[in-house]
Length: 117
Image (tube, rainbow, N blue to C red):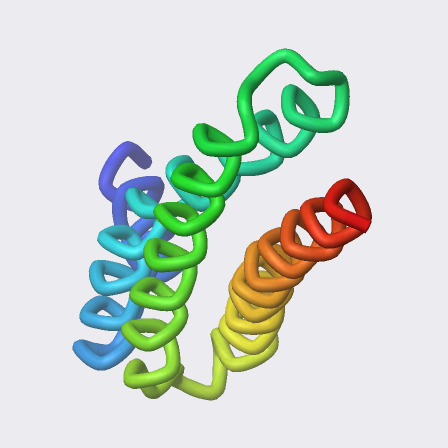
């Protein structure tokens, strides 16, 4: 009876080598997500005037570069069919963050122009 349980578990997690490699690659990428998401807190602090424009600009640049780098890596990975939908969602999320950080710097430029005018 005990042997039957172990056989059943192995079958449940049966993956091809490509699927295992993909999941290991994604695990590495997920390690970069926290620095990408940290920029949201920086945006919040800036809009509530808790940090300076200079600090905001530096952090947005850093987050943008991290998001872009992670996005580039994610786009190079070919997801097995089983994980394709999840991978596409992950890539879309990274694109959103990269675009948001790009636009956040445009906001700062517009704000500076408004102040000068």
